[in-house]
Amino acid sequence: MKKGSTPLKKIRMLNIVAIADTHLKATEKYGKPNSDGTNSRLQDKVDSIEKAVQYALKNDVDLFVHLGDVYDKINPSEFLRSKFLNAIKPLIGKIPIFIVIGNHDTDDNVYSLMADDVLLDVLKSEDIMIFEDPTEVEVDGVEFLILPWKKDEEIAKELKRTKNKVVLGHFGVDGAVASGSEFILTKGISQKLFEQHIYTFLGHYHRHQHTDKFMYVGSTARADFGERNDPKGFVHIRVKNNKVQSKFINTQDRTFFQYTVSEEEDPSFDELYQWDTLEGNIVKIVFQGAEDWYLSFNMSEIRHKILDVLKAHRLFVDHKKPGLTKDNSMEIDLSSNWKEGLEFYTEKKNKKSMLKLGEKIINEVS
Image (cartoon, rainbow, N blue to C red):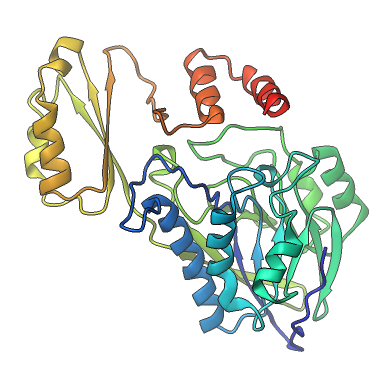
């Protein structure tokens, strides 16, 4: 962990901008190449970080926090590192930055920001503090407990050992709601452990949600159609006299639009011709009906209407046969990685318990 050189302001109220779960990756299946070759969905995610950075600067906050899972995988490419660094670079020399290591940032041996000396050299600054272990930090009289991704028992131990902290962490909580895109990795921490602390702000689950004692900030951009109805953004936190206020700021992420065409209710897909625009949307059309009915559609015509006329950004098509009630919101294609393939297979086979074992095997051989 490196100590920041930017002096922390002596103020009565501490203002913080917190983001989480940006999951930057170069191969985004829901994007397409921009003119410079960058994946458009990656750029959407970078844009969401930049919105938080500009908000922090405009509102002259005192601390900028990333609550984990900066990247989607450990050891990201220099290209991805530069994307993140350039996004937060305007903060350097103005606002200190805390980065909490998340589960996608570490495999207990390596974490994605381990080359912090390189990162800080690029930025010519020491204004970034990276937390890979539980740490207590005081900022202008406010005591923080920083809890990066660890085993539930370790997190619970730290929460029991301390009290009256503002907790910043990356872990699961029992009873919290995961987005449709996520798998529950652990049972999670009991909510009772938050009672002796001022408030807890978390990364890990992508859906923004809160109770009287904890909040998931939520991801800044949608991962897939399982998150299509979830608002995406970051949080402005104010701490004063051991009291916390927060405000959710929507990043206005690109719309994921999903529509189901029913053979019984709309056999000719007439609804398509009632739409005025889908400009910029990532679209998924689910045909629900017999296979012969589904195959009778002219997909070239549908693609032309949605992509060329209505100006959608991307189009995905799925078919559900009669009797299948579960929405198959997960897709794989040639751009999918091993983890996505594993998730797809275990969900299809209804053997989610195999997922962790499969990930362990892949980590060992990769």
